[in-house]
Length: 282
Image (cartoon, rainbow, N blue to C red):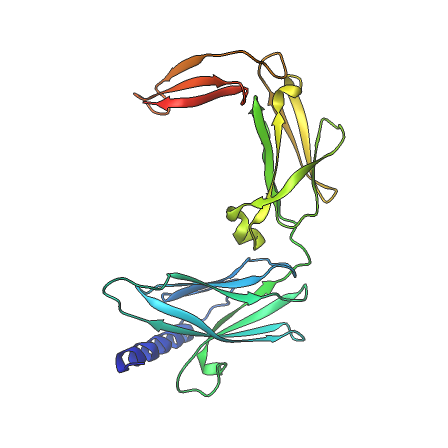
């Protein structure tokens, strides 16, 4: 490392320690200051969920790497040594602002203490106390019961061909029940990247295609079950034509001042969807 880089690294370490001394705080699920934000992902992992460390730095360019991880299972303690090097690249930074470092699995459902250190070239150990930048607790649970049924929503109106959909973090089987009829299994495991921060992985989506016209027009109830446990009970309304599936119809309709004043959309009937779809926007 050149002298400039070494000086910047030492200055950063000094400022970080100074900030901790003058502004003590009890870290809770994250470490944050003017230079970086550190979070565990997911925030509530299970024993079968890999844990990552998300590090977002505040410099225009910096390289963040992991030196070593010590896992003390008996004492539920995880010590992590990091290397943080600010850099100056006039042509653009080759490193991402947010770095995700894989830590692996935590084997016990319990609360673990995480201790984070930034390496210093003047100490003999990665885990020298003078390099400690903060700590936080992370609860590992046996399984993640987080789930969210999305469609149909409470009080919604459904018609045509649609979806029953939602997501669940850890499930063996998803089932739905309409109007107390027999439970039906729903396909589970589709990619939902928006659930990663909660679940720790992406394959949490569930869904089932349904012709809403197969239900009588009017009010209905839908219950969702995750591994046999009811997690939601919503009331919704089915509207539409008199037949469950109609064939041979056609038609278009112009809707003025939508989606904004002065704009318009043209709707066209599609038999496969049993509904109107937008075919033009002016």
